[in-house]
Amino acid sequence: MTNRIYPAGLKKSCLASLVGLMLAQSTFALESLSDEYLADTTGEGIALLPENFKMVFQGANDLSTASSYNRGVANPQQYDTGFIRIIPVGENYSKYTDADDLTTKRTKADIFIYGLALSRSDNNANSRFSNQGFTWGSDVNPWLFRAGTATGIKQFHQSNASSDVSFLGLEAPLATVVASDTDNNIKLGLWWDAFSRSWNSSNKVDPITGAPTTTNAAADPDLRLDQRIRLQAVANGLSLNGSQVRMFQTQASTLDQQNKTFGMAALLRINTNDNPSTLIYENTDTNKAQLNAKVLRLSTATTNDGTAVTPALDRSLAPIFNASEGLYLYSPNINLVLGNMYQPFVVGSEGRNIILEVTRIPNVPEIYKQIYTYYPDVQGGSSADYKGSTCNVAYCGSNIVQTGTGSTAIQYQGNNATHSSISIGSVTRDPTTNTLKANTATNSTGVVFRGPGTATPVNLGSVAIDGVLIQHFKIKTTGL
Picture 1 (cartoon, rainbow, N blue to C red):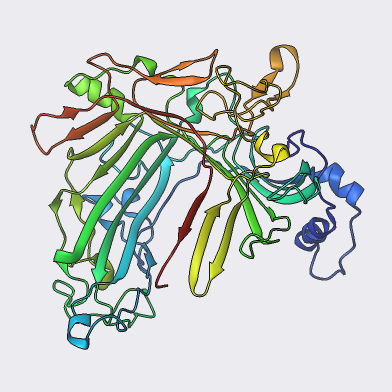
Picture 2 (cartoon, one colour):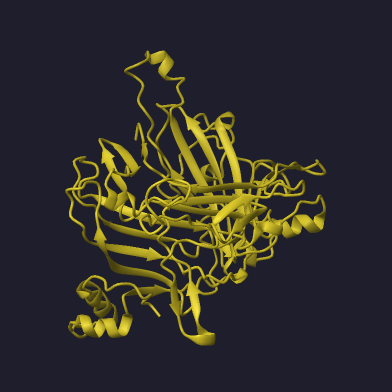
């Protein structure tokens, strides 16, 4: 099923041509497909269903026949050295300081993201990759890349008429109303080295690896050990179900950076536990294993730091991180609304810099009533006037979708919520008011610091951040 019972979308002539191109044999000319025929065969978009999916970034090795996880080598995680490199140029402060002082300014960054891995979740918070595949969605609820149209949209100004806005959407499988723990089946792992470099440091790149060139990988003069932060991230029990990104052209605005430009409406749902209200903390191995099944762990301590300041310099092995040290965020549920069709999230540029902005909510009733939430203790209006709501693990909007009937009926959560929420650990949801409350019992848990070896953990309790509305948010880079 690729049509999720949404309003009719854009014409599909371009999509028809693409499908025809992929299906045509090389010895025959292409034959056009009608929009009606394509609608009957593929629905409103392209369905994607990753099955038995797993991946890990390992270092380039032309002689390898399998990943280190399939060869039975000791410490297979040390081969997780395939990387993504991010190299901001950095600000030039030569106008503001003398030449001698400029050599001491460390205004550049160099970031290496290593070993990006996705696999089936397990209870191990020290392993970045389980080497087991997972299925991401189902044949009736797949990933979907589709074209659509939102009707009656007004943006920025009263003078803009309410009109249809066409969009391209990338949608994760829908989240079900009835919780299913089988959805929380993803393990994410990665580690990274980030450096602060001097503005006039070497910018030569190895054309084979994409890494900097060096004559001393253990003590590189530009990528210095005392200017490095090394961090590992491991997450168990993740689900992205219900997430979506819509891309469209914004309406007219008096601000050039918002005027008929690239806009987005993003709903990012990163959940691990459908009902974390019963979580408790005990300093036992059994409790730790239970909590580690749904966790985001950030750690820095290593037991083997490797031979190079960073493996990209000489293709050496990755470090081995301490098995227990780190910050543990148990059962995190993160549901973020970044813009919507009435309040676009725009991506623009100013000179050589990038601007990311959740645009300001204007004083236009046709717009703000689609975003704000009705509170009964505030005078004026009614629940019917204000359409906004908060997205959490159990609810994300009023536009609930149902497929099937009777015993085969399945209800899927909505996606038109306008407020965000973040919860960590022992948090209870009130279904009547759709509000979250952090548990206050002494054994409530969520944020825990663990040290190496037998160090006593520190339990800071649970966290609930509820009903967050972004009125206006703008990030502008400098020095790119």
